[in-house]
Image 1 (cartoon, one colour):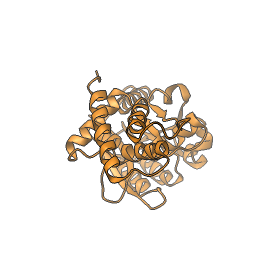
Image 2: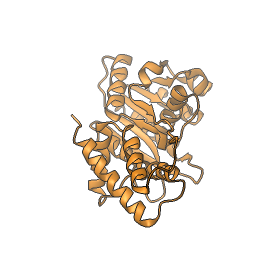
Image 3: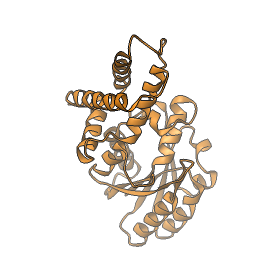
Image 4: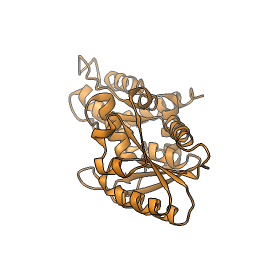
Length: 268
């Protein structure tokens, strides 16, 4: 048994399920360990007698190839193999479907797996399902509610079984960061506003996530992950009512790093 996860589908449909509309990645937080545990449990339930080979995780990486702290957490998890496509100028994944199809067919051809659990909704994966089945592989499709509206009908028809995760499951490992616009955007001073913004921003960050960000900082010369840094700067801009000047931006990031360290220290 192998699990194939299209991260783009997971984030997009998960945010639709929880927020009612697709949210930007910068507003989504993923509890990697909790999600992987649920995927392993479902794979075992789909075919109790099958050995789990590993989880294959497919995602896009922006130009430059720098992973987000969540992507890094996934890639460093046990029994997980990451495959990365690219992200175009519109923020769309490219090359991910072909990676899934290639891996699915090759594992089926070599008889490395007996079953495949696929988390995706894209029509382009259907040909991989068809070919894998000719090698005797059973294909189990997992969708997020409503699966029949978020997944290709032809992909559903080709699969041997269809599972669906609802809100109760998804909200265990996916959260949407709420928009918080201060009632009084400009407070007594810039320093007070920066401190208040950091306190507010970090209140949405759980200790395990802070620990992942800290690990990213340690591996990248104390730089904050872009998908964490940019939304924080945007909130500071809103709070001040203007862009931060270079010195304020430097001060803001220094305080944000310290807040991450403090929050990470409380992780179990």
